[in-house]
Amino acid sequence: MRNIHLGPTLPAFVSPNVLKILVDKFNIQPTTTVAQDLPLVMAGK
Image (cartoon, rainbow, N blue to C red; front, top):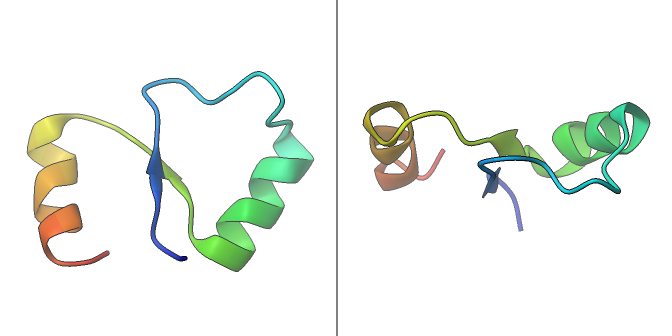
């Protein structure tokens, strides 16, 4: 799976190094606001 939005806070086990790998390989992104996230989710990004 790719383009996953995770949040509102990242789990405690996600260290900066783990986050970098998840972002690079799976395009995981932290959630922001509904107004910002909804268009991205609807566009499949």
